[in-house]
Image (cartoon, rainbow, N blue to C red; front, side, top):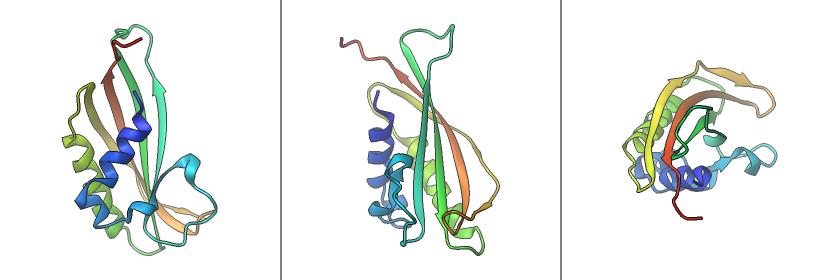
Length: 132
């Protein structure tokens, strides 16, 4: 299951998300080059795992959605995380079991990117394709 493509497609096709963050400002961690000028922006981080003892028909993964904005208050970041959460939790596709929201982290400064940031954490569950 290509979590990266699925999440990117869900977020960039969500009018609620793109009303707050331009499509060009939604990227995976590997796509972050330098310090983005346009604010706010979203950086997606993925970790895929299928723990021992879990059915071989299910694949699990972790998703961190990092929302960055200019220093100030976290109101706009909160609105963006809410839109992301709604888009992911309500998304349905064959092969996808669910995006499960886990938590929103507290706000932190990111001195390297000259921003403030908060992280939304999700658990991703999908069915293993029966294709070989």
